[in-house]
Image 1 (cartoon, rainbow, N blue to C red):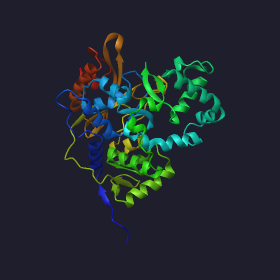
Image 2 (tube, rainbow, N blue to C red; image 1 turned 90 degrees about the horizontal axis):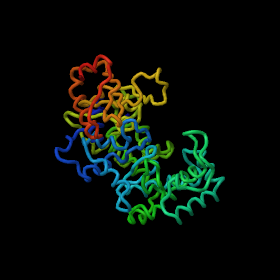
Image 3 (cartoon, helix red, strand yellow; image 1 turned 90 degrees about the vertical axis):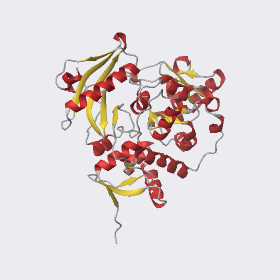
Length: 400
């Protein structure tokens, strides 16, 4: 006799996911504190880092989307305040800021990188073939203290334009990937490296290394808590777990009752529900989302949950772009209702709204007011004096 699985409507799945991502709570009515920020990051599991700065560095935006205006210095101190830091940088979902207590859960990835198993074949090959050189780089950091690539004297000069890395940079990245170095601080976004034992809290450095299977199960527990409801691909993508490992771990968590198999309306793939997930009666969110926000970073999941086909067009030639260069989805209630192409014009102290595209089914008159308020809040948070709209018609006219 076949098992009858619990089923969820798409609307319910969407609200469960939004609650898991922190959008069902009202923003604080008081000044945002460091405890608010850390609670948000820990509930998400990690913040993705990206170098694009046309608006603001991406890792600052998820907390703004959920908490409203907060001091970015709170996040900087959490990530880089000596051994009192509460976050550290490593490869989670791409380059990420991750709660320090998860560092032992990622040591298996560092060890596999040392063995040559991992995502960067070129960096891996360099680490194997230039092992002596990498040891010299590590020795320089150990002897001289925190170093960025601009401080580094060894290795060939930079080559090949902005994409080219010097040998010293490749060595530093291999040492970072393998856990022999970590991020001490950032200097104009340049990573400054140091030894983990001089940077991370002593309790983290001295913590026992868990068995690989348990570490991966714990990362999946964090993933389902942050997602609420997810396919196995969604789960493994959150911390970029190897597919073969994740398949076994998911089965183990299902058998232990820590993942509940469900059928979601319209999804062709099996799904899993967090047993502690809660279904809010409604979600009254209002948020501009970073392209690298964990709510939308897995584009196929975004389409399944919101019927929202979303692609970042930074690397698309300008004449072929559909929605713009740096486009933020706009969440209103429990739907993604618009796409907003934004730029911080710091020289003129202006938040430039280059384009706005409202979804075909959404009512522009309903979208305009909340979006206008959110743009003003964003400009104030970034220290920009004005919101400047382009001359495009449609929703732009309503925003005016």
